[in-house]
Image 1: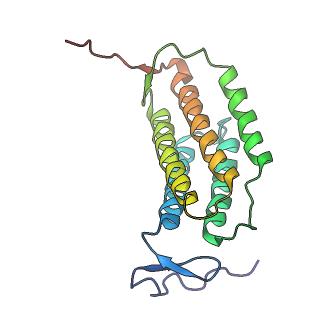
Image 2: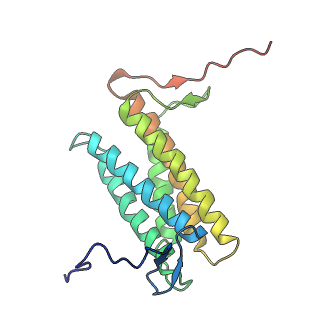
Length: 186
């Protein structure tokens, strides 16, 4: 494999623009960069969650695959070419199957749950929240530019998967989910 980067800084972004993989330059605050940044932030949060899990954790292979998928999605956003797609319906369906398998082992929800339970569950909830933001930003981008609809679907399913992962993680080792206890109206 050849070196992808020989120098980390380029100075080309010093005036507020950034380069896309297709060679064009756009403002750093452009909706495409906002969506790309949120996908990157989500990937970082998953890296933190993975680092906190034991090496033999059963969720690790799934979350590592998700990280790779998110990098692919980021690539789609960076290439900005409607003919370049990596996230397919099969990728979304695979995520759905993982989600269903994990959820099947959980009791039905009877109350809203709060982020927490333990550190790993709280990290999964934080990743879920950022995933929702990445989805909103990608949908907003799709209002004005062509975006792979399967990428949007992937983010939508992923936020659900991360919610279920948080539930799984909070129940480990005899732990419990933190239930919402609403105040009563006065």
